[in-house]
Length: 329
Image (cartoon, rainbow, N blue to C red; front, side):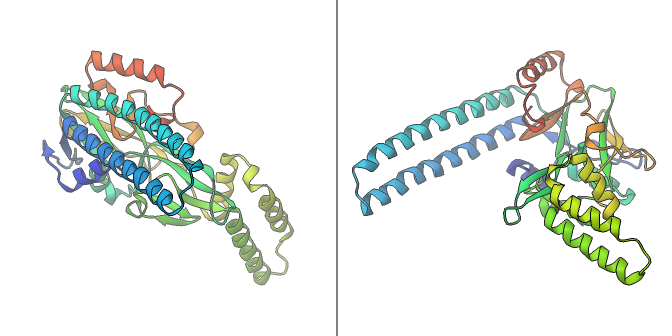
């Protein structure tokens, strides 16, 4: 999810360096201390509203429904709340300390990359190709949605050298339903939950296709399609994600695979090298570039531009959290 800081920074931008036809991506300054201030403010707001709710709600219930047996329950709830708050603030303070020690650098935002190459068909840029995952939505029926790994912004330092990083791109933003591209800005607050297709909708579309074929030609074979419909409808949620993705491609062209590309940075200049003829890769066929460290709510770091000491600290942190999901590194 895009943080408030990233949204505000996209509205008021201070660019560094100049872009041209060969290096069209704009680079802007990044001040970690501003991010630190945003983190502190948001944490205090969350703490304040949570505390207010914890005080007001029990007070109202006790006032209107006095019951001595509820006192123990509320005391237990308050102790649990204090423990959760302590754990949350421990993580926040650790992150704040890191940002307070970080040097000012530069960032390349998603918006700048898309604007620079939109005329060449770029609609989606990511650290990895998307995959399919199951979610219990749509009236309780499990549905497949596109789990994506989008680029928000890259944090780097100017060391005067040229650096290259492998990313992945495609000419479709997000698939909300099969064959229905969804614009990035429509799902900015829900990046990882753009549903592709659920079992009920798939069966409905397959039945429509079957009926269309019947009307088109009485000699056309429909048994295979009918068998496929019944088999897929009963087993859809038990099939591997790669197999479901292949079925969606064959059915109506819903293709979540992505093509590799190269991000080049030299000083305060940046560009993307797109190859329309590059092979499309699935999630299992790709990996995150070794020099890229996703930062969760912080900008993604291009580690080979950081100092050796910063790289060592990041390596130690990655070892401690090597089992964590991609966006919690």
